[in-house]
Picture 1 (cartoon, rainbow, N blue to C red):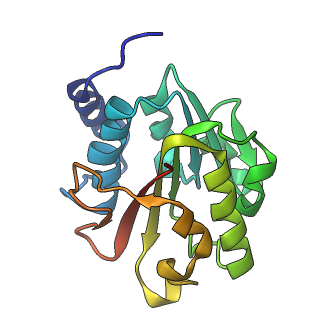
Picture 2: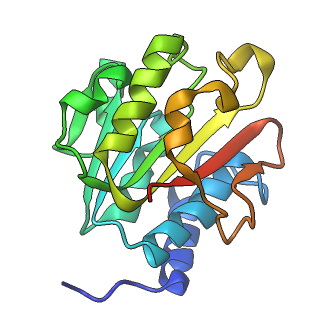
Length: 196
């Protein structure tokens, strides 16, 4: 096994990737800046996940695959047109509620779901099914990050009422010094969890 790369390495990589691929200039602490410049580098350097699942893909996220070179990255999105933005050879087109049927339990060390809850994942039964499956797919010590919009119309169920999320332990994510961080440019919020 190779030695994990440092946080300085991932900060340099993030800066390079954002400069080369970002479709607009990121303002410090806006939602994409937080994910690309702070969250992903920290997770990769400090948790060193070898198997990652990234749920939800848009065109602006295709360069995220480059953060995970040399690692096993899976992506999942409901829309078949978004396959081209996913991980090459490891992309699944399906409803997120079915995620548990695609992998064995205790498989992933890191799962990211950004812009899916409230943007397609709206049915309360499917919400519970999805978060239960995500929990089951994670190894002990694995990190789960949920990016969502804290807006009434885009919050189908308050997070504190989702029973499946209660299985996770909130993670005080060191770079943000909190388990729930609201980005600078609005209501986009990141919740950080760990499976004990």
